[in-house]
Structures are given as structure tokens and as C-alpha cells.
Image 1 (tube, rainbow, N blue to C red):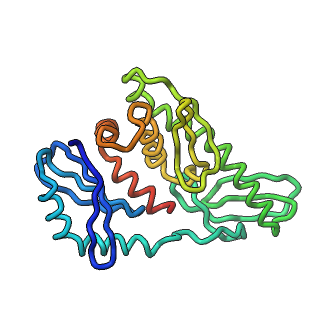
Image 2 (image 1 turned 30 degrees about the vertical axis):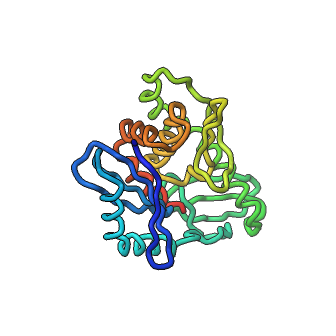
Length: 237
């Protein structure tokens, strides 16, 4: 067995966890901001041993899960008014709204400078900023894809087509027809987190589910994927 999903009950709470058997000497328990619990256990560890360790750390696991849940939802609704902060590639920039005939967005000196005929119309400001995000995403996402693709090209896998759109619950997806779709909101994340999402989806070219083989490939091509995933979740969830 290469891995499995299990659960325990602690108090009134069910703690669901994913176990991965890997080549290591000690067991590792990790809680991610999206409430996933991943256990990395040495190959040959029995389920009883794993459950004993989890029950021993159940109080700590619950504390971590409760901590992350307090931030849901983490980001308040955007109002698109002057002075409001918005992210781009992991950095915060404030909106500077300017009355003007030309509709445009510029990034300079720590601000989004947005010029439009009616700067007091938040829908207009939002449309201009979203259009700017899309233009930047088309460039930055392709740069990220080109950084990540060589590891998969060596596996003789078909190169997917890249597209960008708004997605409510996912950062990315890979269709059966080979289209890699990225969430436009990902342009707000640091570059290393964009690379993580693309790498995650490219692993699905070889392994369509999230089984142990998938995680072994992900760990091989991106050994620090958990750190990047953690950083993404803290930044944008």
C-alpha cells in the first residue's frame, strides 16, 4: 500500500488525514491552511502505529485546524476605492484613483494609479483593474509555465494548452483534453506559488488523481511544494 486516507474523532470533531508512505526515517504531521492534514510515514509503518501517533497529537492537530479556520473568509470583499490595498505577484499596492479622459492602469511607486472618467464608480475601477490583471497574467503565467514544463517534457508527456479564467473554488485544473486552466486571481500570488499550481496541475498529465504516485512525482519535481502551497494559502485564502 502506497498511502491511504483515514480519520479519527477527537472530542466532537472528526480529523481527516492523508497518509503518504515515503523514504524517510521519522513520521511527519502537517496541517495546511486549507484544513488538509498530511502524514508522511516511513515505508513499512503500520496503520496502528500511525493512528497511535495521530491520537497522541490530536490536541495539537485540532488546535492547528481551529487556528486556520478563524481566517475563513480571510479577505474582506473588495470595494475598489482609493487607498484600498490589492495584491500583485505577492505584494500589496494601494489604489490611487485619478479623474481623467483616458482609462488606464499603471503600477508605480507602490501604487496602482487608475485613471478613468468616473473614479467614484467602483464597478468601472474594478473592470479596469481586472483587465490589467488579465493582461499581466497572460504574460506571467506563460513565463511560469515555461519554467515548469522542462521537468515534464522529459517524461514524454503532451504539452497542454494554457488558458486563464475566473474560478470560484480552484487555483487551477487540467482537462482530459489537455487544457491547463489557471484562475485569474492567481496573478495576485508570488511567482513561486504560481509555479507550484502549474506544477501541481502538470503532475496530473501522468497521474489523474491525488494518490501516492501523484505526490511522489510532485515531490520529485518540486521538493518544497508544501512550503509553496502553505505560502499560497496564507496569502490568498
